[in-house]
Image 1 (cartoon, rainbow, N blue to C red):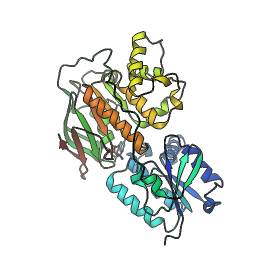
Image 2: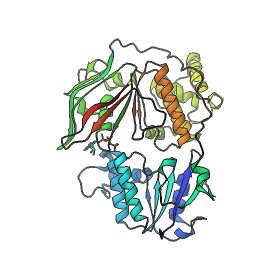
Image 3: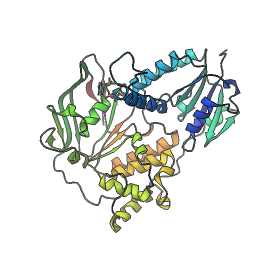
Image 4: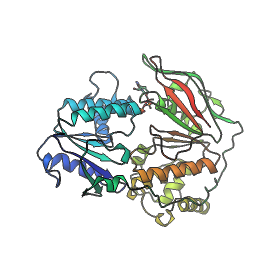
Length: 416
Ligand SMILES: Nc1ncnc2c1ncn2[C@@H]1O[C@H](COP(=O)(O)OP(=O)(O)OP(=O)(O)O)[C@@H](O)[C@H]1O
């Protein structure tokens, strides 16, 4: 029998997990008396953000002593590995795992499950979990975290067997753009024998890939295989594109285009972007700001712009909440708004980078429905980056990066 006690706490969009985590680390929490006065450690994105900040401000390389590379330049999987090693070295009595499998590739997920299985013999584990499929097998106590309150469940099956039934059906059509972005070529992005290395480390090797108008792609590859590196070349944010055969919207990289020229044609969303919108932004303004790629609105919106926001908010069932502030929304609602904001100008290419990380099953399904709908009803091409095989996602093509010692090789793994 496993001598230690282990919990799974199901979190949803309304859970105040930050409050729960810090309470558990600092004080006694009802129902968790076994952890009272024990030393806890936190394995989460939140903890990583603090270490990155620490490294930038004080140059203290706590997690990356073994390498000159900065934590912030590591891939998300590499960061999580470094964090786990550091935490286990500090010999905690209990470990809080906040959606531990997010951003991890399948192999590392397996490895992490094994490591956790072994350490569960020695220390207590509290798992905060959004996806049913992620619940660790040795957990024996279950609870829901509703806002700040923990409701213990007599029987885990009550939660584990509930079905996903999202209320919104998105039965209105995708609103058309105010202005069509004219582009006559079929190919939006072309990489021809593109290779990238950081110092001595080869990351990408002879990548050949074309994204054409209206195509729906998923980009997959293990942690550290170079997905973010490719994305940053496509969005014009990486200098690694210069001097290569990289064509963005018909122009060779480095032939006089500005990053702004490129960004005008792209809609982009990754979950960390939501942190930038901390001010008082109403949902109506959030959607309209997508037309200007700005954070907030600096001019009074026109009637036509308000009408467009009405149509988009109507589509996702949020018109009645148009005056609500963005920061008051649940995580799932924020992701829908951010996607609508990225899509409102009908960009030539919509990039969604791990957009469902941290969402519960129901919200993830809803998000996937919206993406499928955009793919079906617009001429915008979609590039969806995710480790998970998202239930219901219907990409036409999958581009896969396979790691080798000389950098990742790319191939089309699915072609509808
Ligand atoms: N500025 C940099 N300096 C040094 N190495 C870097 C830099 N940027 C990225 N790398 C390395 O390039 C490799 C690819 O990183 P990238 O972030 O593109 O991977 P990824 O496929 O997005 O991974 P993940 O799924 O874990 O997010 C990693 O080994 C990373 O450490």
